[in-house]
Image (cartoon, rainbow, N blue to C red):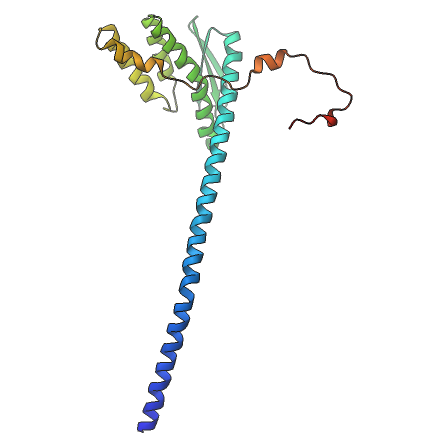
Length: 214
């Protein structure tokens, strides 16, 4: 009886020893695996951020180009979005022209919002220059219109801050300090001179495949 108990205790001890050894061996691999997983996630997140940033840059470039083209047709174009119709619309008071485009798919809303924000950034810059030139009423009206038609709310805070500073300037309150906001750099400026590109005469070559762009 005592011998059987001794063997049983030895067997239990061996099982515990084997389990502990295997558990110990598995820990470094598990930690390494978790570390590698986190590192891979960080790389993927960084790559997604780079891609998102590059897409935003391209979208801004296209929005500025679209604004410049529309400015050739209308005095001061303002872009807005609507989600309750498939139609486009255009409104004017004789001075400003509001171009309203439809966002058909809800999945596209964020992209269209970014495009409209970049487009109207050019109008915000126009208003800032009006303030710098002392044309306060013209600037105020454009700021108010931009805020009214900012259906995405992307620029509401910036526009409200400008209107507040403009009010203080007209009251002669800390004019120099309140004027600073109207000199801030803006994103309204295409990196590519599309106008120059459109007007360029193309070079005639025998074989386009022989051109090395890089």
